[in-house]
Image 1 (cartoon, rainbow over the protein chains, first blue to last red):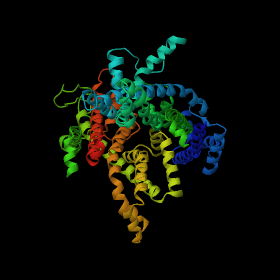
Image 2: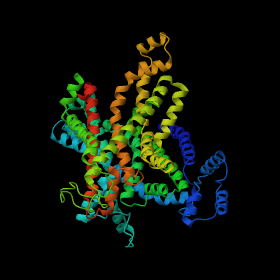
Image 3: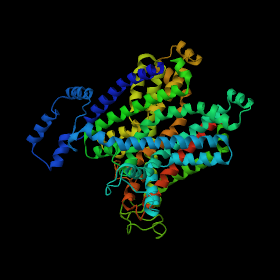
Image 4: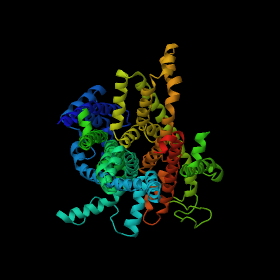
Length: 325
Length: 276
């Protein structure tokens, strides 16, 4: 219970941060060349100045910047993110439609990177400075240096074009109407390559941290005690070392949440997934500033929520944290 | 001297240094080897690598020499990576130094700002900056620097907090030195080494960020950048996959070189950490 208050307090502390971000980005967007009305006029194929003036008045764009900012924040409190003139829908609706693929992709990549990194890190640490360690560490370095979008393209060349095992893009097969398990299977197939692509860099980071943290814990006194008790090596690693070595890995989830969201912008573009990242890219190209601001809000919110759960998980793994709270 | 010897004892660090020197050599010699504009039409489009001795790495879909673009691209990547890193380190060190030295409400305010930057995914912020300020070489470089300063700031702050009450600083204070003299002249030189080692991580990320932006066609289209070429090659990925493959390998090797050198420097400067 105590840990919930502690995590809750940290959650409350991040609300000012959220407002700081929104105010900063809102003011920044005032410098953008052209506003929503310009974008709309361009889409309509031009129009006269009077129409533009009327539209600006309708959207409240003729008011002074502080008033607009106040209006925006006030609407935000009521969870109204404004209206996207490009999509002709409220921004909140547009974002909610695009959220599921991104959440699915992020969860899948994170799980893949976490568990593969964990296993590889343990293997590397067990054979430190021998050939499994050398191979795994070198692979980690190479994965870290690989641009994700390039890896995605090359994966498409190999697995979709030459081997024709997996689809090259999209979230599901649009041609076939499927439901239930068949649809799930179809989506899973579409997500394999994006998951690997997004997870690769994080896999490299996780495996490096896991290896270092295993090596550190393996040298501690309680491990020697466990061995002296006569426990076999597997028991020592699984029951005693792993749990302690996991702490830095969990910290990393919180730290990397933002990077992962940023990475999904690129990966979703490579695999043409209709997700939040792709929406961010489209709204930059189409100058849909309302949507862009909404995405800023939602992605910051997502990072904060992930960090909240990381805090909880952290305390679950290490009871000492609860005691210090 | 000891550190240099230790650096050269690690094979990975030496490989990294050699790779980095090769990339730097490519950037320097680009002008001599390929005096023509790398973005000008050079020959028939989509010739495979090694098929035509005039174009060792082939031509792209607009008939431009890929090898020339790779050489000029080394310039752009190193330039953007280097300058953006410098910007990030300068902002980070300044903010971290003031926050760590003064503590109290200054620290509070500066760390709130840092937290805001950390909470917002940096690629999303990069998109916002490019949407607002456009995508020329200058704005992209500054934008990449502006989204990368938070980790150096935290690192500098931690160093300053541990150093600010050491004896040599107190001695300086007793001598009547001003805060700014203490910060820049006394504490900073001692706090800098880990930050400089960390700069390699910032530079590796900066190169990757720019190439991702270029791939999405949101970076400067008027320079020969590796990311631009990958984005261009995407249109002919089905058959002429080499147009995208070649610049990707260039990015991979450059980022690998920068990280290996950084890792080598880190191990050479902190020998005790390595034995762990």
